[in-house]
Image (cartoon, rainbow, N blue to C red):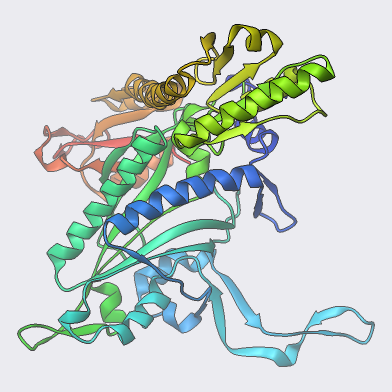
Amino acid sequence: MAKDFATREEDYSKWYNDIVLKADLAENSAVRGSMVIKPYGYAIWEMMQAALDKMFKDTGHENAYFPLFIPKSFFSKEAAHVAGFAKECAVVTHYRLKNDEDGKIIVDPDAKLTEELIVRPTSETIIWDTYRKWVKSWRDLPILVNQWANVVRWEMRTRLFLRTAEFLWQEGHTAHATKPEAMEEAEKMLGVYTTFAQEFMAMPVLQGVKTENERFAGALETFCIEALMQDGKALQAGTSHFLGQNFAKAFDVKYLSKENKLEHVWATSWGVSTRLIGGLIMSHSDDSGLVLPPKLAPHQVVIVPIYRKDEERIAVIEKGKEIKKELERVGIRVKLDDRDTQKPGYKFAEWEFKGVPLRIAIGPRDLKNSTVELARRDTLSKEFTAMEGLKEKVLDLLEEIQESLYLRALKFREDNTNSVDTWDEFKDIIKNKGGFVMAHWDGTSETENKIKDETKATIRSIPLDYEDSEEGVCIYTGKPSKGRVVFAKAY
């Protein structure tokens, strides 16, 4: 499976692309910058969806769906929002095709829309126009709604999962009676994303807020989680925005308070996307292919029967079916690979490359000895174990693998996080080592932009405890600094 497969050291970009393509996760489509998510890749997304959806509903949210098309005039109602997305919008101008005199398909010039429609890059505007109809009094609040959808952002430089013109995501949009309630919601959802990233993806993240430069267009505050990939670059893994009353005022969403006064509502929005699959790949995978944490693996265990003679085949596969049923009874997701078109060695290599956490091999000798061979994907280690008590053994190993992947990624982050106090030291680490760099900053957008222009490093987040941290002087200007912020090159 891994023939012609680049290693991380040889070519990290090719290594990543090879995993996506050769593990059958996704491929490029006929539409520039868009991708086809293949069944195995989509199965991982479904695992993510299921976990997140439960977490959203457990925190009181409901799912809904809003239109793909947004009237252009809606974007002009919130100036910062339109400025943030104007260059990425796909615009629908006509509604019909026709045949020309030569029989070729053309856009019918007589079918021009009276108002152009924007293919949603995000849904704040269409949703807040809808909420205007839903909200009348304080009894209608809060609105806690999420939607699973696709969005289009016309990216010029695309990369499978990480940055595509069209991608899948969820976007939560909530309305509240007071500012404290909205802030509590934004912080709560940051916590949900943190729990998901660390407990399901086994991907450690830093919590913080974005600078004004990096803030979501139209937000008053953007909370974020940032993860560190194996090449030393950061990945924004989730954002939660406190929108204040900006969208409520733009779309005239008011409620009658308990005091019988008309008030604008307070808003949040929050989302994660299929770029999390890219983060999953780059957090854990190795030079042998994809590595998946058990909680998100479509197949947590694959069973590979080994036989040479037809009379052995029946007995070995029957035992494989028994083991599969036994494991499934305790909630383990199991694949029995009984294809007779491929040899066991090929299957071993294929499932190793596709990142299945545990592989069970069983042959005629194992039937006699009542044993199986267990192979772990995270360590590539193998052991023989008794069939008796196998399900308990597998459950323990899956839990162990999940934890070991998190601890391994956490150690990598800790080993690649550095505090610096001088500009020369900062430039050296950003250029030659990468990772997270904790450094003092004077709090101005001007300095932030100059650092970015000179080093390509951006402020990934301002730690949540920033105001309580050590004071110092900015590495670039020497001016006073309230605390260290997190710099890195990023995807």
